[in-house]
Length: 276
Image (cartoon, rainbow, N blue to C red; front, side, top):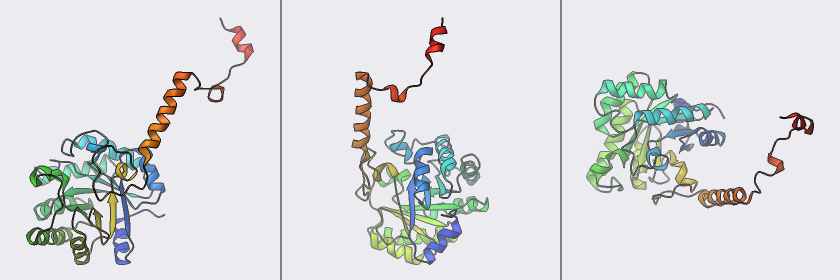
């Protein structure tokens, strides 16, 4: 597998080749995602819930994102690493937005950043791209706007909001975003958007017609105990297996059967005899 670039992703859309994307937040899992040949690794602010235990993405800070992005970037040999810009990191001013995006690249080692919002974010997207930083846009259900939306709800189901999402996507493409995430959007609306923009669309709860798909890795591996959205397919159910292994470890430690001689180091009798 060759190094994934923005040019390669655009070429995949032109050739009608699907794009794979998964989240990862640490070195070990990111290395597995990379080894599996996944095109893009998203260091999502979803780490707030699945790693840090918050109820939403809102408490996640720039320091959190840089910390986890560093770990993922060390593991990614070929996958493109995209880092989420957390809440309030791109809302105050364009200058601050560019600086925060730059930190994710310079300090975190990401190859691109992702930020939420449609036409209202166009100027911010342009400013970040002017600083030579690739941008992934994110429209539809934008989790950082959960309080404004009144919960996690499907977006674009009526004429007004559907038209706005199409306009958002076109505006973000014109602003220079090289990829657009569509979250919780009706499948046929996502199909329409995908057909009307020249950059790849990545769906999450947006049906099969997008140019690619992304899921939260803890959800699709069955490792998260919180709410699992309808659109998540569990490709594995690891939690019971992990708990089974942890329980077996506990029982062997308590019984004194682990560690056995097989897992211990030896010392010669001659040395032992000369010890004080």
